[in-house]
Amino acid sequence: MISYHDLREVSPRKAREVIRKVLGQHHGNVSVAARILGIARHTVSRARDGTLHDCSRRPHHSPGKTSDEFEALIVAEAKRTHFRYRRLRWYLERKYALVFSENTIKAILRRNQVTRRRTRSAAGTVRHLYDYEDLVPFRQLQLDTKHLLDKRALPKEVYDHMKQHGLPGYEWHIMEVTTRARFTAYSYELSATFGFVFIMLVLLWLRAHGVRGSICVRMDNGTEFCGGSARKLAQWNERLGPLGAMLDPIPTGAKHLLALVENAHRADDEYFLMVHAERCVHTRAFLTKAQGWQDTWNFFRSNYGLGMKGLTPREKLKATKVLVHDHVLLLEGLLRKIGSLNHFLRQHQGGKYVPTTCQRE
Image (cartoon, rainbow, N blue to C red):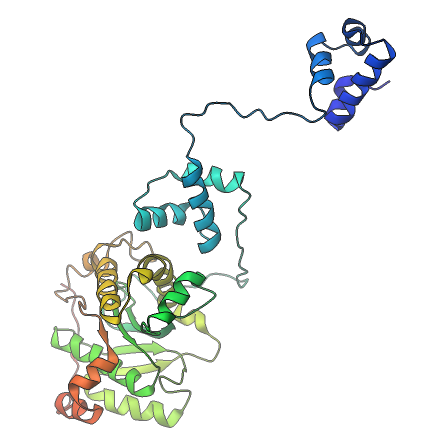
């Protein structure tokens, strides 16, 4: 015969139904029922007077428990951003100035059954894109554009706010491979004119601040650049030749070759747009916030990528006497100030640049 304790492991409800059945057979005598089933009288009384289901063991008073309002906020932000406990802790501190431990957030997500959104990654061995130990600063650059209005990357509220207030829709981003220093501009539309102006502007800035040696700019085959056209690529490289620079388009579909700048785009979503975009109601405010984010990235944000060892771009550049780009701009505004692209090229492309060897100091 199965005992009460074995039956309870299978179904607490069935075990209590058995107790009530034995009580009924013995005219409600608690002592007799407890003796027959081999359990305490208190267990029989509880099954008789209580519910068939197990009661919650949650304490009536929990002075250290997170308040219901904060718990609801954590759950709502977790579902909205799809962050896990570590990134969510940073996000809540940055956006709401609320400090929670990672263990607290982890327990709240588990208690509310907030599941993790999983993404599939390509199988295969990990291969480094560069020999990071031997790279000379500002020899290798990665260039890409980012569509800021991305429904998959941004919460609906942030997306709708940016669209409603007419904030810039595109980010132009060059990342220096050795130090992870970034150069950023924004625009309302994508065009090859903006692409060439942005590349030329960054190269001129680098040469003006003492960067020597050849520069390779890796980019994709988007229409805002050379669009996969060999003729256009040759024309751009010919114009950039006097500055000692060469464009290096990646093969079609090989986005992993731009992994550094692509990962930075994810950080832009999580640490800049999700936090600050809703606070901007016009372009000037947006560019001000973007300037603050770029300053944070270049001067204060530690990077734990290959070869960085937790240093900031500024710390990595400390021995090179090369400054970090410190101005975020709007490309439409730049062209209005210049007057035209041809005037810009005439002003800055006279004479041939002769590259020299870049030495570490």
